[in-house]
Length: 98
Image (cartoon, rainbow, N blue to C red; front, side):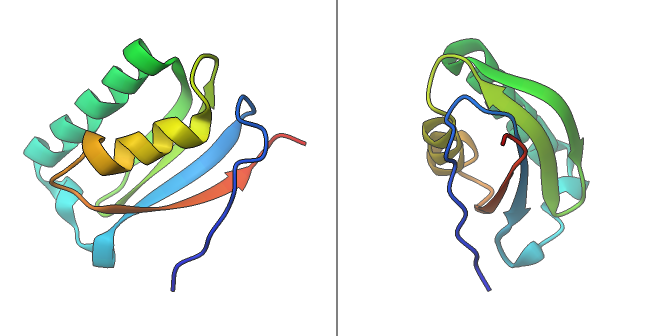
């Protein structure tokens, strides 16, 4: 079941969980972890993504993030479409900014 969450404050602090399609354990392979980390680094350097905390599990990631340059929803959209083409992710957002 997919849930749709919206980022209301584009520059607020958010807890994000991104899951792999059908919960496949792809992050057990170093190649996929490297792709993921390279994509996150690109978003940090080029789009102003601030990552405060993160954890990579076997089939999903948790991030506490914020943006100071590009709207956060745009960063996440681009990350899922082009950042990790080999790993299809579904996002679930939960705001921590009130």
